[in-house]
Amino acid sequence: MDRGRNASTNPSPLAAYSFAMGEAFMHGLVVPVAFLIAPINIWVLAAYVLLFALSEAYVHLGYELMPKWWVHSPLTRWLTTATYHNMHHQHFRYNYAVYFTFWDRLMGTMHPRYIERFESVTATPVTEWRHPRQSRDVDVICAT
Image (cartoon, rainbow, N blue to C red):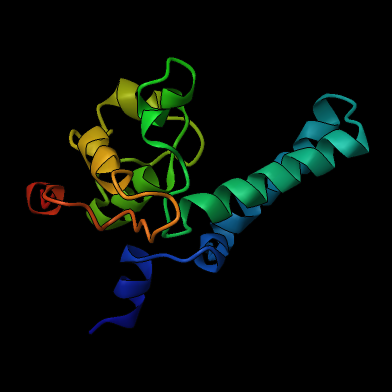
C-alpha cells in the first residue's frame, strides 16, 4: 500500500500541518502582509494563530464533535466540520474548505452527499466514536 496516499486519505491532526514548502510559505506570508496593511494588536494576532491551529487540527481530527443540528442552523451550516473536510481527503474533488462552506457551495465543489453523511455520522452519540468515514449506509453512495 502506498503510505503517502493513505496518510492523505485518512489524515490526523498533526498531518494538518504537512505542507509543501511553497504552501507553507504562502500560509506564513499572511502575517507579515497583514502587518504591512494595517496595525494589528499582538493579542489579535495570537488569537488568529490559535484559531487557525485549532481549526486545522479539528477538521483533520478523524472524530466528529459537532451536534446533528449543526448543518441545519442558518449560522453554523456555513462552517466546516471534520466530516466535511474528511470527505475532501476521501474524494479529492469536493469540500476544499477548511473554515467556511461558502466557496464550495458557490463553485459547486461541495459534495452532494455531505449533509447525508454528516447526519449518519452524528446519529451516534458524541460519547461514542464518531469517525467521519463511518456512516451507516452513506459510504456506499459516497464512492463517487
